[in-house]
Image: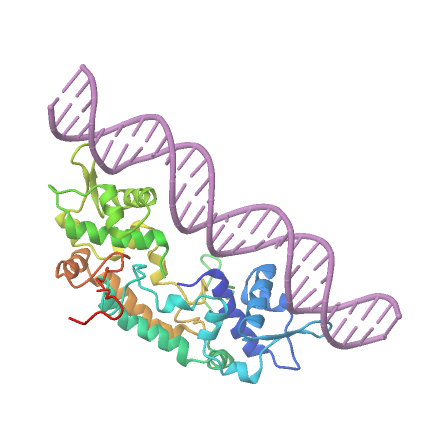
Length: 161
Length: 161
DNA sequence: ATAATTAAGGACAAAAATATCCTTAATTAT
DNA sequence: ATAATTAAGGATATTTTTGTCCTTAATTAT
């Protein structure tokens, strides 16, 4: 659906929103590790997020790093897509037609348009804050590390406890 | 949402389904022109569609070309995605997490999963034939050529008829 | 002031996606 | 049989995406 860059952007922003504040910034290395993304590439992405749209903020120097303002927390998730110049995917025709519209619909248009509306709604109505809160509840995850599950290995023939 | 290759594949298949039959095949040049795609690249895509999944069929030589069998018409649109090896996008986590699931959901999971289900339904329940019929009705389009609208240019000052 | 730390940004590298070209193979028409 | 037509497929080129590395700039701590 989205490019890797945008996936990293979404994960990074959510992570920052959950774990940072103006007086508790997160360094690049910490962020990249937390969201399981290549560090240098993530640096570029964070630059886009700080510049284009002010989704996240940054300061250099010791104790510097990335954080997100209270105001930016209220931004719709779509703002992240915009900063990554990838928000048109939401409106795009499934068949890639430039001219696809209500008056000149592609064969999938009428079926897809409802899905498209929900997608747009999701990204426009949910805020960055909202997603971060979902995480804070401790019910959602944001990395690719599979949880290590302890498995009790029993010797064949051993009595079950 | 999909790669260009897959967009072309969808458009090509629908066009072939609408305009071909076993005794009325379509040549590459005709197809590429109709769906507004680069000809040589489209050739590669048609190869994938004929080989991998037998979505479309082909014969070489004079009066040869591409067509689709009655059986293949009944295939779900998803078969096209499969032939292009791009069907996982339907199931993929929005944040690109490999481990995202019901038991370990990402922050967007619960919101997105309903949309995902509808997407999967669309591609699994609608057949190639169905989309082609939508076109045959003459209500949908499949190319990027904007309709030329005849505009009457009047000389300034000329009397309106 | 100086050194240490951290993001910003430029240059470059690698990989993947998109696209073209040319030769070969199959089929048909003559 | 031969020539003409059309898809198949290999090789290669171009562009975009993904990724790394190194230097510079800003900020802080000493």
